[in-house]
Image (tube, rainbow, N blue to C red):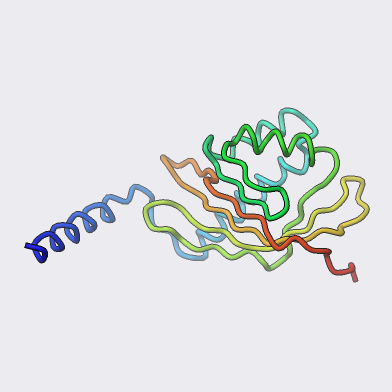
Length: 162
């Protein structure tokens, strides 16, 4: 009996994977797509002192996004995360992706994982003293991509600019 149950689960898993609604992308195309999403998400973040840009930024996140920050703790919803962004970031800091650091990994039937490093610079163009690693899980549903999980960790001083 356990063998039959195992075969049934295997058959079910095969049907689920075959029903993947998202088109297959080459690794290069997926990386470019997620890099474009990352750029748009953080363009809005970098201008979030404008309420329309803050709303645009929020739209990139699932309503039940989980955000894990090694210094700031955990937020469990988009509203809570955006409230913290509005109160602590907007008009004060901008995010810059460290060139060449973005790595993208597909999640079959779901979306992708993006990992990289970023710096945070004072909005006035001054100090870029903070740096961190990040991991974001992107979900694609019906052609719409949203972030469902964020890890921001390893916060440290950024190396001096050359």
